[in-house]
Image (cartoon, rainbow, N blue to C red; front, top):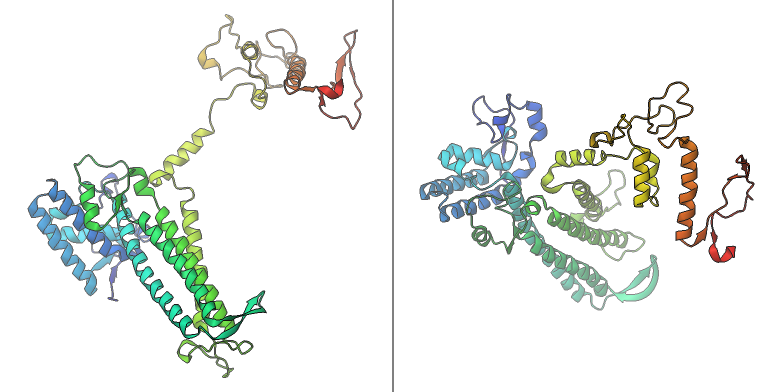
Length: 476
């Protein structure tokens, strides 16, 4: 692998202003550059970025958006950049954030304004999505070839040991005799399923998002199908919002890779057990073992143990990617989503706060009673729309009232009907409770308070085992 240079502090004036820097009045802090830059790891997408840019430029020229002279200059510049990267001569800088801006800056330096026009009808959003799919498609193809080679090795070894008898285990206890070849073919079957999963996921990776721009497409008359055919994509992403924010294909690949590592880890664990003196089924070659500094008899199967250890890292990548995506709004607009969540909890509430938890009080007559009850009396008895959610409240009971309460009025806060609010609300709750019980076919529980003939209130004694409701059939 060629050595790639890195430059953290470019010379003053050596770098152009970023595409979005016109909005700001001061340059980005050097610490912010280090924190914000992704070029240290996404420069592996360089070959995919160049391939996507070449296909995009040729499409722009074919549709008349880009001139033939600009296309020739862009092709020449990108080929030169590709050679610099292969030779290790390309200078990467964190001040330009990522692989895309680094290549675009170098292209502009080589061919002039034609390099800037390459970004026509394209955003970094759909550019990143396209490069990621291109790179991941290549990774899937390479991994599929490696899986095929491993499966072939297992099949060849299984044929060699088709008659080699070994004990089969359940609960790590000797169970039934099997052949060593049969045992190896079990792992080949696991890897065959892994290859099927990769092939199935590749069909969803191989869809072109380029042309979606930032999130809502572009007004230029582009030809997405031409770009897809040149880059080898099977289909187009149909929705621009989903095209730039979709990472399902990456999650699917991470899940398939995690399962591959789980299968390899199981095989590695058996190699560790089988190579121990207590089992002695296999012997790992010396070139794949390590020893001990104080125990010369040791032969440690570190290759198998490292496979087990690296499995945890791949599983962790899958978990991290799922957690990363779990709360991403469309196109990654976190700020808009936060503002929506903040305002969603500020809907206007009815002044009767106790009413919002009573689902049975929804009739029109009850609504009219509530309106009369909470009417703001301004002398004329009218209720304006602005006053509907700004009614004066009693400092003691928290309910609307017809006139300001003094020291005496706070103890006898009355509604427009002239009755004390607490007594009237208690009667209303009992009435609604009985109506609700009749609707569901039950008899209401006897009230703890009842009125006698003289009008005085006395408490009724209720047995401790009384049920809250009785079925109508039981009461009869």
